[in-house]
Image 1 (tube, one colour):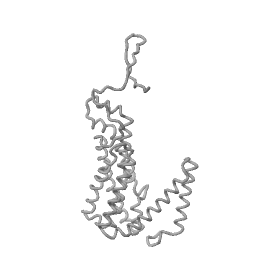
Image 2 (image 1 turned 120 degrees about the vertical axis):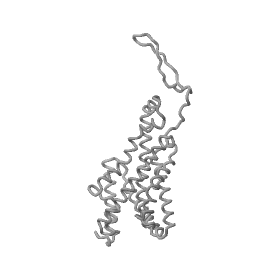
Image 3 (image 1 turned 135 degrees about the horizontal axis):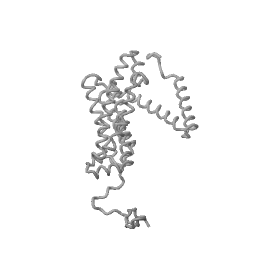
Image 4 (image 1 turned 45 degrees about the horizontal axis):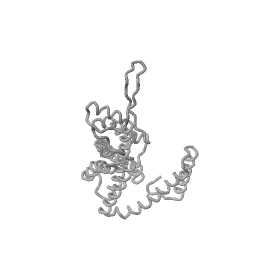
Length: 283
């Protein structure tokens, strides 16, 4: 396949339709899923990319319109990350995590001259880095909140030992935060050996130079590493400080009596009365 040859051909459309239908059949027969999930996702992707390509063809001609595209991309990424985090309160704080990742990467790339400050150069790099940071931040928030919910007893035990609330929560969510970085770390480690990432393939098809494609892909992978690490670190701080939570009710104040009653029991051998605390049942 040469870069000068057109890719949008009737055969490409036919192949995409066949693959979408095959995915729908496997999803329905093997996984008992909906037959419409894969085709609808494929159609939506085609329509969205067609619309985006039309807009970008005009927007990338000027710097100010390119910046407007970046703003829209960031807003959509913030909304998506907030929804994926499954947080009940403070999900919009994830915007700060995304901003932290982008601020650490984009100015460095543009001010150093590695990425020219033009729309056609900044928008693709910004989009790739933003997408990876969005995914890592959302996964980190969701898994951290899951860990706090499932291991609440460990947090209470750490608090009873005199540890701070921040440190007690961080002990529980450290591993989930690290796990959120694994997909990109694995992709970086196996680049060129197991996978050929999208930026490499795109530059290779456009220029025909494998060396140029490799250089661009290394730049993208390292940029993703920095942005995702910064974003996940901010997510961790937001979670341990209680900015992003799943609490539906405020915790009981110190000294506040709980809504419970005591049932006296007699030990079978000692005859000493004890007490169990059970929740009061509603009448």
